[in-house]
Length: 423
Image (cartoon, rainbow, N blue to C red; front, side, top):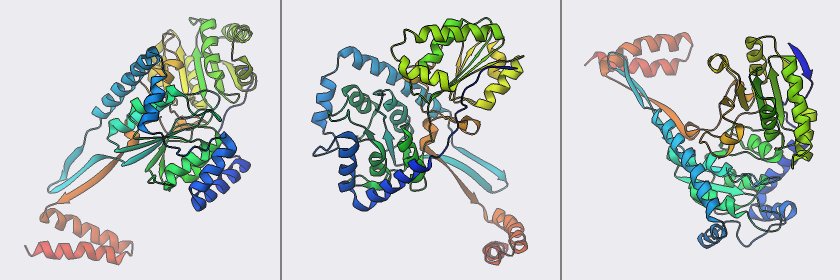
């Protein structure tokens, strides 16, 4: 293995100053409610409408501003996301099994009642994110989805985002961003009831708000700056690999990048392609910072070493530009979503193909996958027993409880042993 280019390995870190700011804001928002919401929205977004929630007429007017091709393309993307979520749901079967004579155990999947969906704005109006949190929740059976998206500063909202939120199935749409949006949904401010789960990506303040609100409600995951990993052997096209690197680098100056090649020659050719393409890339001001500061390039000595390097980085998105795809597919373990072969690219997963783009970053792919229909379902167990089974299990349970000196627990077992021994 040889390190060809050094960069920062992105890790999730809590920034003490961000933590302090968000903590103070959340306390203020919980104490002062809508007055604090208006204060922060005016301060940060120059936005203080009569109502932050859009009416049916406003939603229809926003959609009416769009070209029909935009609407058709969004419908295409959302149909793919919905079809995949429905296929995922079909794999989640209830379970009931008799583990011992008269002992019936099982589980069932129960959707949460409400979800708060955050659709980010900021540098880019990422309206495609609407379907990634709203559609799986609705397919899971969630009754109410409250959706928030930040305003275009001082101007209102981005019509394509409103169309995507409405078509995805949002029950209520608010033009509200950042920490106030998370507080409104999680704490229940104004006429919004507290949601059960917060879902969606955002900037560091949104992410920190989710972290601090966890426990008051559930969250999908803590998503930091986006990441791309690419494993490429000498059969790959350096120009295509470079193109895909820059496709993610434009997200954010802090985007994470790791390229793992099987030869030094390919590594150097790809680096040269990245530098060449940066010269004409419209978003080079952002992409170049990400590449220069965070881009890591390795030349691995073997496939297994390439896999080990990738699994250690645990990228959010991982592309395979290799001849022996099956070997990597069978052996890789840590990634948010895998893009197999040069025919696929991260942008397909981000926008249109149907898999979800809310994925683990900062090495979280070691222990979790991304958002999917199961994120909005609680898998709850249940049990039932015959009198004879209760007597059998009760004798063992009483002895176990007494050994742990939990005597009241043991009594609950003993009374059943005594009761059903008489029958």
